[in-house]
Length: 295
Image 1 (tube, rainbow, N blue to C red):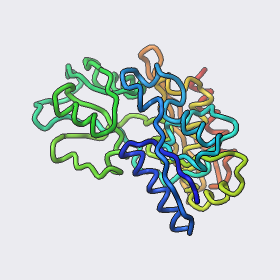
Image 2 (spheres, rainbow, N blue to C red):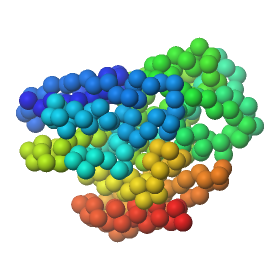
Image 3 (cartoon, rainbow, N blue to C red):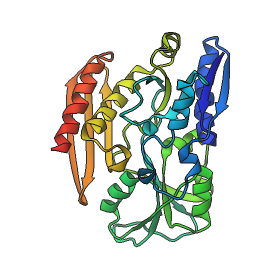
Image 4 (cartoon, rainbow, N blue to C red):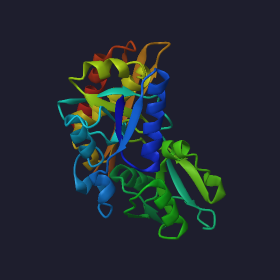
């Protein structure tokens, strides 16, 4: 029996059940355990103000105490500097990495660069990057699960909100019923749109099992993005975005990253020849771009 730890939101449970189904298809019995995290309890503060690992700490502890065997996360929620006894054992194929700007159909909003609108988000990165597109916008804190955020928008607390397209797709939400929306052409959070499975570093059996569901291309790209963030430093407390793409035909890994510092956007990009199993090359490129942005 493989014990899977997860948060209790609809989105988290979707992700955990997706991993559970893959493990069942390999012939394993699974059990899902719901664990509430600090990020679920504290909803009146920005994520960057609560601290590192707000959505992972309690699940980490449960793994270390052998209460669960693995934990399922959105990879972007796992700190780049993490507990040395834990590791990402697998990632699933990446879903959309885009952010969506969503507003009510009933609101007559044009959303041009002069728009004086109230945008809800809990993300420092989204707020900082969007400020370049909508310099006159006002940004207010928005926390809670996807349903809660959409309800608050419908009830008029905000003119618009920003959500990840991956979450909307996974929950099967049809935004056309109530809302207008558009994809935002801004750098995503490192590893946005990726489901990760964590395990104990000393659990050899589980590591071997998870290799069977690991998506190598996604793993390579996410490692490159997260290495860039780690090299730059600051985690969720800095408005940092990154997007890597692996061209398997030409064995080429490309990375573009950016950060907003003192209201100025600084970007850097690069590429490296790389086989799909050459994770050291992904780390090399990530460090290079992160260091370039840092300096």
